[in-house]
Image 1 (tube, rainbow, N blue to C red):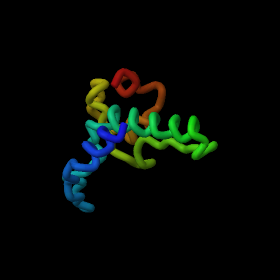
Image 2 (cartoon, rainbow, N blue to C red):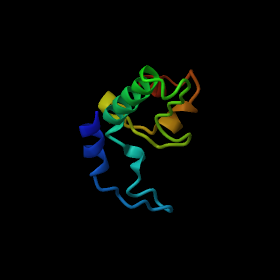
Image 3 (cartoon, rainbow, N blue to C red):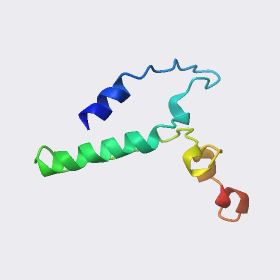
Image 4 (cartoon, one colour):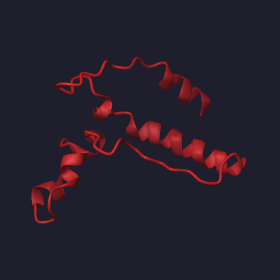
Length: 92
C-alpha cells in the first residue's frame, strides 16, 4: 500500500482551469486504483484501532468524473440528474 501511495503522490498534477474545466482531475482515470488504496487504508485504520468511524467519498459532489473504465463517457453528475424514464442515460 505504501508503494502505491508513493507512486500516486509522484504523479504530476495537471493545472486546473476554472473557466473551461481544461485539465480537470474530474476525468480521473485513476479512480479505481485510488479508491482501492483508500479503502485499504480505511480498513487498516479500523483493524489497528486508529479510527472507528470513516467517510469515503469518491469524487466531489459536482465532480465531472467520466467512468470510462466502465464504458461511461458522460459526466457522472449530469447523468445522476436524468429521470428514470431517460433510457439512454440509464444505459450509459
